[in-house]
Amino acid sequence: MPRRRSLSDDETTLWQRVTRSARRLKPAPDPAADTRGSPVPDPGAPPPAARKRAGQPPSKPLPMPPAPPPASRLKLDLASDIGEALARAPVRMDRNAHSRMMRGKLTPEARIDLHGMTLAQAHPVLTGFLLNAHARGLRLVLVITGKGRTRPDDDMSPIPRRAGALKHEVPHWLRSGALRPIVLEVRESHRSHGGTGAYYVYLRRRRS
Image (cartoon, rainbow, N blue to C red; front, top):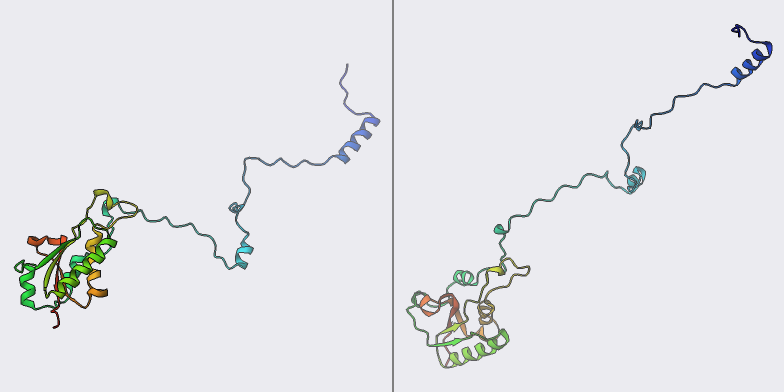
């Protein structure tokens, strides 16, 4: 069949209709390309206009908290040392007698041992003992409280416990209530009389 070099009139008319109805196609966008010109906002954050109306500053990254110190550097102090506090108190008794007492050269005229007693039991017993000693004209008595038991894990427990409740409470009792008017001096005893586990209580002179 010979090759045709021209269209028939009907074919020419049909082709012209097709070309008039055709439209240029745009290239399809690349799905992998990111055409956004700004950072993607947080879908859970309020719009900038709402933050501006509320007076909120633009959000900033939160600073990292400092690392806690090692456990070996932690120091849990429930209260100042009672012995040091008593040692810093001004001397009220005769200084020569005080010096002899602190060197263990004065012998207590009476003593009471509060070992094994609860605070509720020890308070009235100590009060009665000292009132009786004062009424008898005694001046220096020894109150034994003990140093208190300690355990290695107490310092790192969630609720640290003070060792020796009696040791810490007795000096407060001696400075309050019925004992305050008769007690002149309170000091930790010399090691020959119990050391930090006992107190010298120097009573005021009884009025005749």
